[in-house]
Length: 290
Image 1: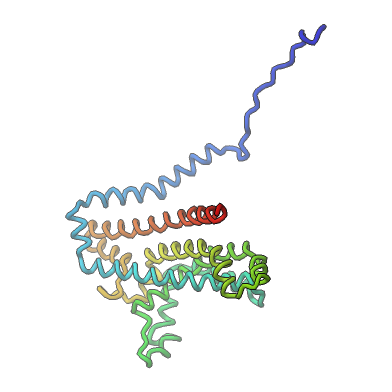
Image 2: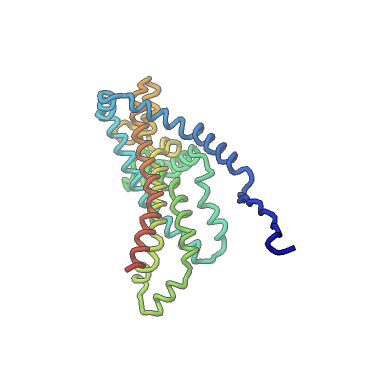
């Protein structure tokens, strides 16, 4: 028998096995639930808002009460997000770089606004900063008012937005370590130069992400704000509360218009959050190429 007459058994084609069993079914169920629970209500709101027409939108937007509520919500959310971003970066730095008694408890307290009901937070802040509160009664003789003012709204929004800033900056600082700082110091860089040229470029994407998350959360916050705001029309009335008022007045078109504006603003914030890592990745690649 020659070698030419030998027949080798045909090799059966091997199929690539997925690492996760039932991946296709899980993906389909996950997308289905996402569509039913999240996308369907939002799509219904978008369709209903598109059906208002030009007259309906102009009637809703030109209302002075609506304009005042939107300005207050956007303005306080912006200021609170800036404060939360700076304070969150500082708190994350302390948690990562220092070891002190009670550090784990302090780290757990950062997440408390996530689990605490917003109404409880609002009642606690009002009791603290009202005219008879622990802090408010000491500020009242000096003419400083926090509760039932826009300042109180900012404090409430910082309270609920701070965990977003801390938890986005903390992993970056843990990954950064001290090696790059030591290398910069060995080359004669000052602390300010090290902060500006080494730490901030790495931390900036996380700060922007935390800012966007805090801003989006503060824009739609309701429970923790209505107690400390006082809800005075044209002064301390926020847009989410005005939506509820419009619904109680059976002005569904006015409520839908305000809700659609808040939805669009939150969606833009989420787009910015997703675009931030890509933009900084391209910037770093360009620096390496240069």
